[in-house]
Length: 458
Image (cartoon, rainbow, N blue to C red):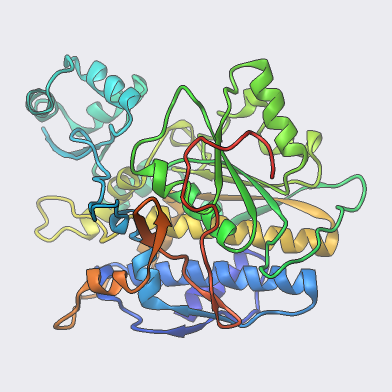
């Protein structure tokens, strides 16, 4: 376990630091898998907390004691599953057309949770929209008649999302080189023309620091809300013409303020840059290059907002045709070989017990931002931090496989409820994992209010 943490810390420039004190089962039942899901989940959270402690040391001269319960991690990396409304109900995270389909020569996974992705998927397949049951039947027939690779190319060309199921070796032949970058990439970005004005440290490692959050759907929101739990003032910005789904309008804005800005207008772009003028960190989760027209690529931020730490999150990395594609955890699992590595029968691809690529990468987002902030305190230098779901998938696969074990009487739901907290308005969710100096972390900005904050810092 600690070997995995040590490797992440080395990528972060924090080699030699001691990780948190761990308690609990190193193999929580909720994360049972032939792949090292529990180990990677725990390591990513542990690295995040270690980076937070290092930032506190840089700002105050004192490193807080850090502790982490592994059962808490197991609940946290399934947070969207454990979200509950006032009636105790959860929200289904997948739409009817987001699923596996049998193709003529294998399997295809589609993602159509957002209406615009559903529209693109159906248009690429020549299927008219209508009632879900009827549409599913038609989509199944079209996909069953064509090769998986052909479906993948056609759907992506139309602006939709679909991937063919690959083995790991097939992905390594088809996809970008996952070894071309470390698990957490870091590169010098800029130095402020004058020393960065110090922000008075507070009770938490990131107290008083500002994070501009331009991310959606689990990985980015997990990272930025963890920064909020560690003291940062996080402001999430969404496009008002692309509203968030019901699940993520709650789960994705926990721990932060949420606003909307239309960056396709001149005033919207000016407002974004006014926010960046006072931000310490920018976190983006769009396809590489997609924000260049807004002046928000790392080199542009370095020129216009020197001293700002930039964290970029992508699905597939930045290389080749895949670097320009959209993606989500469920798609990356299937494309990279995780589906076949977790198959129970060798006939149908399997899945991880949680959206680990999202959650682990999210905690790596936070870890990278925290480590970069610590570096900025000590040197004045800003850093570009880069992570991707596909690189996290490679990290997971590199740990190999082992038989799945699960002890009698394990109840993941009961264990998760031990970490449940009230969000307000009757909602409840899992609290942020970790303790600093014996005190549990908490979520700020409760109850979550999607899109209701003004586009300004508090």
